Length: 477
Image 1 (cartoon, rainbow, N blue to C red):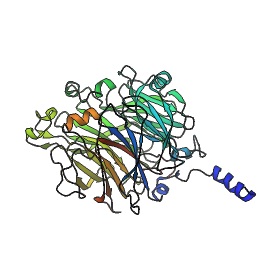
Image 2 (spheres, one colour):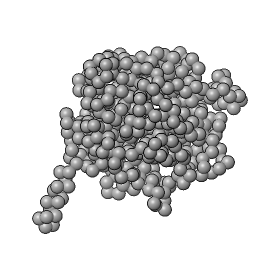
Image 3 (cartoon, helix red, strand yellow):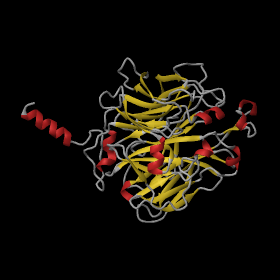
Image 4 (cartoon, rainbow, N blue to C red):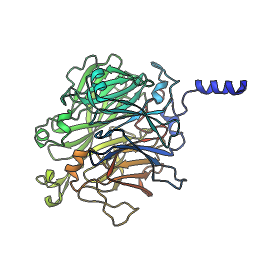
């Protein structure tokens, strides 16, 4: 290698990963993704789950197709959420790691507690497993079990877990080194009253972590427990933490009527102190809702508050058309199980897994969202068709949602969690993944050329090549 080539190679090593962006504005200018990664749950728990690679390039002859499937080495994982080892938060000034690269996918098995590390660098179309962290290692190093969500933070990979090895609480967070993947241990130094866990996110510029609530492994693994649900025992609060001190600060309690407070989506603009969280159901009327957390007095040092800003009602229906779990209610609940916020903080997307409705809201004024578009696909009763197959009923409903960095493409999948799939869609979930095109000024259109049918493999979370709307956090505006 000549001197010029050596210098160029050295410079490349010192350049930050070109998929790291200091600000949301710069992230939105990135080239469109050409690949999508998706977790695939095998409907037979005795068989292997997988990670799928989907061609997302409209110019490709394989557009909208599964081009590679990587089976996990053992069975019973229940792959769920996953994420990158490193992302734009590596550029944050209080813990800079600009030498890192977005290379590895951290893929937990929520039921097995096994964590898989996948390398995408040699060939992004064919990632390979380079490390497996066994459940006993997770339990020994952290005291936790059933890892659920991963986020690439400024100082490592953050992972949350639903509970302990015995299936009880508390659930919480642990850290992992982003290069060696060594488990660093439990994150919390003072958890206060927090017991249940689900999602977590942060406002890095304001030294704040937020966590939400679902249930312990014993409360969720066998499906919805009607007695626990009607007793208001599932999660109904958001917890606020001091990020650097790792101490619990405040409980934002929505009340036991609001059951299962799940996905957290903070504003991407790091100067803002608000975000949205979805609630699966209300015991009052089976409605779902979206709540806005915000800091009193703007971005100062005031207390955190939370208020409901969107309510989506249940739809009355003939009980004979409902699954056994819901026949006594005579209505289809929306079941908001995922939400996502575009990188410019303009559009909030809401999946209604029960009714089969997918909603877009303009949240330019986060306190007063405006419904701008809806799409119907699947649903417990409606079984709305996809334009790729006119007249053919679609089962399942819009569940996980992922938005491209530029906000022009939205990806949907239809499986929630195996035992819950069977309760709400007892005829069986046939896996599918769909794509929606979004005009610059808003609105939505299902792409008739992108409807990937996966049969017995049920897709859950999607991650996009180079990052997406729920993978990265930023420290500059």
